[in-house]
Image (tube, rainbow, N blue to C red; front, side, top):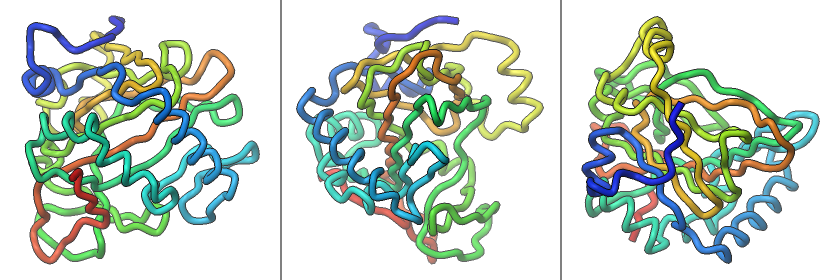
Length: 251
């Protein structure tokens, strides 16, 4: 299993992302910015918001709808470093469509099987061709759009802690975003064929990913935190009457 530290120097960021479906970037956020968002998110976790907080007996380990729970998150969306990266992939006019905080700890130390991210958050349910599998998460209506739309979304994972192979770093299968939507059997077959990359990154770094890219993560093998702010961006509107539940411009 190969460990990825940076994107290929022979390719531009957009070209690497298009080819492989991901990129790992160091030093996107300053140490001061990281410290600020650690403080803000920890404070929000202590409040245990009943709808957006995901918790177990040890405490809150995820915060959905992060821009609602921590309004200062919108400042991070408009941070020049974040905006420049997003616009390099999606072009101008991009906006945030979803935000979540995840943290692996000793008390919430989960593993995630190989999968694709297939749903988006919308304002209200409307029956539109190609949109199916309606669900609600933390009070927000979610749906699976046509795969062609999902392929145009950018995931950015901003790390508030060092993330290494031994504390639950993201694992990906490069190039699998080009396979479109996969059945569970096909996912198992592709994962069994090997070739996974571990996306190690330091605090302040980012992992970019197409949601259709096959990805997974293992439980932590050491104590501590693995806090990640998970952003999703788009630069297109949904077919009427559907509307994005969150639409926060990057500028």
